[in-house]
Image (tube, rainbow, N blue to C red):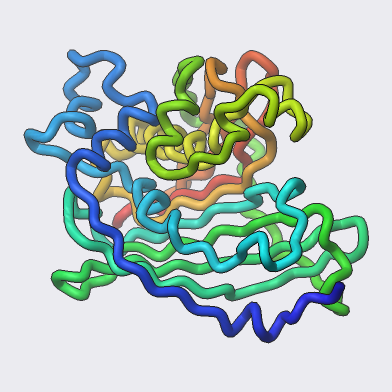
Length: 284
């Protein structure tokens, strides 16, 4: 069945999301921060005194903005999170009400057997001040739905990583139960918790949320180049290239050229790149 591209592009969603320091601290803990309670750099993200917000917490605020649903006759069993982009307009408040406004901005049909890309853009602003907080763009890759629009187009090229050896490398271990903790942020897909469901999806056991890996990479960049200051992050973009299994060690390799930090993240145990073509823009 053909997809109604015009109808999809006309869709809009607006919602309010209330949050407080509990949600902010839970998110940081679910990324693995605070494992060493004597590490003062990490404590600022998991303790209410002087609390700071990890920039990628914006993905939690935007999680409820879903314009594509099972009623759209797309094969969700073959859906992958292809890319995630984030622009921070100012540091996120530790509490408040966020206004979420979402729309579909692009549909790229790669042809039969090659899949369909749907890009959704989400603007997050403060209800109290009206100021913009963040703009996110997530790309869903529907592997089983290419050739549904009647047109074939190409995705834009990815950010190219430098060919030299990495300027900095940092490894962060994940915990076996990390997906069970991260799902308390809102994404309760059984793929991340139920072994039988994961096996039916083609995985040996439940996988870690891609956005958890994304947040861990952001923490690695902040620690390396931002002195753990979230205000130093302006953009954080990445492509998801492979799933992560809870308990694996994630090594983020980074290259800095001026205000641009290029990065990728790999699973050390499998020597497999799980995040690729990463691009972070620093303030100033």
